[in-house]
Length: 212
Image 1 (cartoon, helix red, strand yellow):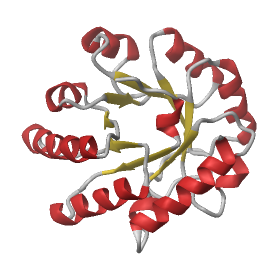
Image 2 (cartoon, rainbow, N blue to C red):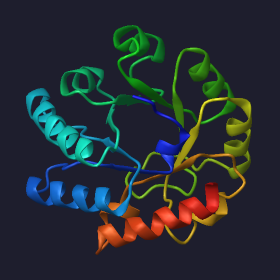
Image 3 (cartoon, rainbow, N blue to C red):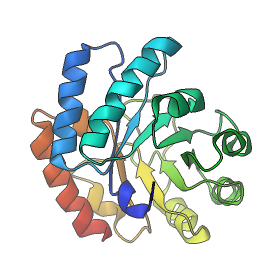
Image 4 (cartoon, one colour):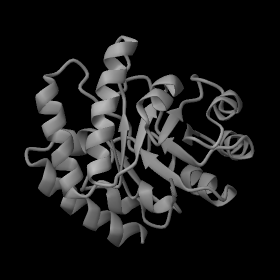
């Protein structure tokens, strides 16, 4: 698929994570209706077959709204489910190995926390970078906050697009203006909202105003 920085504008990250599946799919469809431009399925503890079944259903739903599906940290699931891409962290599969396995079948995103990691990921075939946590994180306890200056340096050092992640919400998104990022990746700000569809509409307008 033709994956560009525009796909990173409002990048939702989530998964059922042991919650009721029907609720998860309903929440995801609300986010898709609200205008998310990409969805990353993150399931850290599901057995392979359950993860694959969920990924296939999510792919159908994302395809209905022409939104790319990225699988977090599992290239086999990404390829087997028909997903559009895979995202790997610094402690996950090596980008060189991931590109060797995926060829040109998958978009590959890589987490980068400094300029050195960003340049290496770009050199080894990453299509985009995820950088953070820019405002801390409500979903991960072992992360360090990424200074805004470092985020700017990452963006200016590479030609591939960058999406910022970590504690971003409607109240602080404008603070990322001028950083050079293509968009924001959100977890709690979307899936913790009371009205997910309307929240996404508002977040998308804020993102467009800030980054386009």
